Length: 197
Image 1 (cartoon, rainbow, N blue to C red):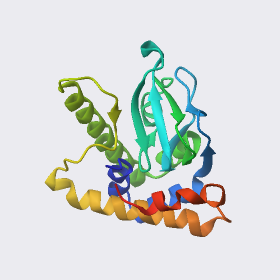
Image 2: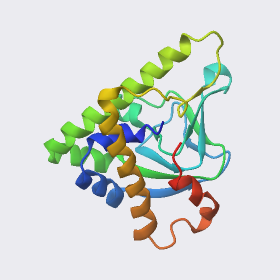
Image 3: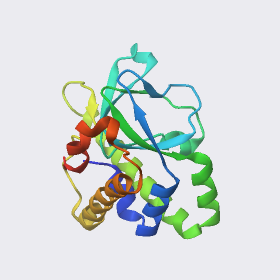
Image 4: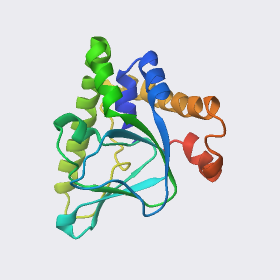
């Protein structure tokens, strides 16, 4: 499941429009680190296309998870202000939308309704991640967690997740339509941007 839908399902259309207008598109090449364990991080990232791998030094850089289109990274450090607890590296050519913490913090301070929606969405996102981790730890054998493996959806959240999916598709379309050739370098990934998983 794309976890960005938890955020986009709670936010309103104007909020998503703001994210698109303020966000910076960035291309990550295979082996390139987007976030480094223990080093300051200043952006929240939405994965638009491609695949990232999460690893930690304590496990001798053994991968503990893989993230794909629709996932969010950098949100934990934004919430608690601590350096990242893991390294996030591209496994293949990847495109992300980076939201500056500075811009996001200013928006949260100036727009209390946006702040209310954003923090609620973030709470749902982090709760989903924690539940996924608990389910994983209850399994018989340890294996790297794929954040896109989750298929169980709470019925009460169906409408929220459906709206989140629609807004994510709209966000991708906006980024393609409003920027000059934004996907030219990664045109072979275009099918991944619009396909659901």
